[in-house]
Length: 297
Image (tube, rainbow, N blue to C red; front, side, top):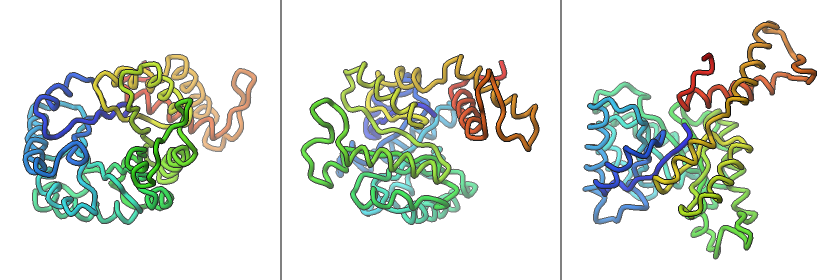
């Protein structure tokens, strides 16, 4: 998936509007954007929204950002939303692979209570929102078969560290936040799941968003979170592989197929291609399929 749009769970208007955003995934938020007094009503709205989309057979992925394990509200969140069968839950402030394991067990209990097949609901983890979480980013290997993606966040990490800003005078992330970004990327690759880039908060800065999207594609992220519907078009466009990239990836994959399972280093257009090039080509084709493009056409 390319675009993940945050939507406050306590706003019926914004929930409805999100359906016109063309986001690949809607991140319905029960955490930061919902005040404590509105948590219960937000759970009900989120559950009803998911149930309705399932009845109408809308294929937009829906993931619910629950409250953190430390909040004491996680189980209440799950009790309300799991019966609606969301595609997944987003775990904020995850500090260790053990947190994902714990959440997986909690989800399994609610799946069983609702008569839902075990493993139906996936997990997406935000792993750098605290200093402890950043330092433990390498602990997600084999954490759970439910784990689908790993992302990072700057705002909560800023608060945890007590920094004045996450960016320097030129708009680039400072060292610790570059470390958080890189750690999430490496954590996702080592765990074999998608790496999702964090939000770009200056939602009126289209050029800045596009530049950050292109840097994310360059570095290996598969998608990016959005805080405003107007950001979705840019994210989808930049994260969709170009026709030239798809054609080249197809050529590489076909070359290895024709050369047999023992092929190692091959030549294409006078240049060496090997197994890492094949894996990269396969990822490009997977991104194309996620964007609704059939690479075989």
